[in-house]
Amino acid sequence: MTNIPTKSTSLYANKEGKVVIHDLPFPNPQKGEILIKVLYSGVNLSDVRTIEFFGLRNYALGGEFCGEVLESSSLTSTPFKAGDIVAGIVAAGKSRDSRHAAHQEYITVDPDWVFKVPENLPPQAAAGLSIVVQTASNALFNHLRLPLPPSVAEGTIDNGASSPMGTLVVWGGATGVGMAAIQLGRASRVSSIVAIASAKRHDFLKSLGATYCFDYHDPGVIEKVKQALQGTKGIIWGLDALGSVENPVSQEVLKSAIPPRDEVRLATVLLAPHGGFEAVLGSRQFHVEFSLPDGTTLSFPKDDALADRHWRGFRWVIDNYGGDYKPTPVRVFEGSGKDAIGELHKMWHMSNFGKVVLKHPLHQES
Image 1 (cartoon, rainbow, N blue to C red):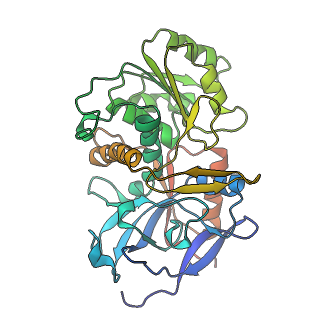
Image 2: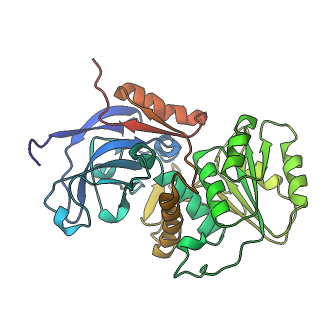
Image 3: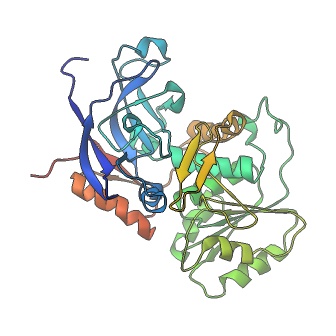
């Protein structure tokens, strides 16, 4: 690579925990890593929530990206070549090195973290796909224990499995994770999928595979969902894809909407699950640790078996994107670093429909 840059402009939580524009050193690939010029990075609620909940300081932000592989000394030992367009998810947790954080111009990553973007998948969509889809896939195929889609089940206990009997309930059906979960549930051959979301999203969610939709703004939504579920048979799989912690607490309202049943399985996108729920990460291919303000450490060890299952679900999405997997909205932000920080803070309000991705490099303020 000629004319090597000296810096990589990033979004960064400073020593006070404020998100700022910060120039990091140009990353030097470690042995076996690949060097990537980031084209787009995906915006997620976790970008700001982890700063607030876990007190992260002096921490580079960003968990997913799409970019171009650049020449580097370690490239020949990898499956990739310069010019390849790749996308993926990066390690999280308090010990993540800044060179891996996705909201910056240049990053280095382990080749196992990325995939080559196929022609059917636009780069801007690829940048925002990894976290929401792998979170949904991890929830459905590991925590809720649904069978994998048949086309990616070969070599697993799900190969040749019959269609699951039961109902998938997704609270927050119009979130990125929720929309992915609906489509993965359909691919798993779940015949009954209940989505709870704003009424204006119901038609779109039904086009993704939801069979019943309810409006969470409806004061009677809990009783209406419960009544609908009383007429179903089999397991109830409940996913809190919203992760709201107040007004209302989404885990509580989801649980209260589920009638008594011999078998109920519950999962949430929050790392602080309530009783009966399991916490879902965006990936199990990393060891992840966060420290709570009271000194408690949340630890999620790497688990290759779980990672293989949620990656298979993700692979189904990549293979079928634009076909059996219907694209969901993606908005590309192109502008200043200051305004990009504003996009991160907007995530607190959970008002975006679909995914927001940042185009890099971010413009400098004039």
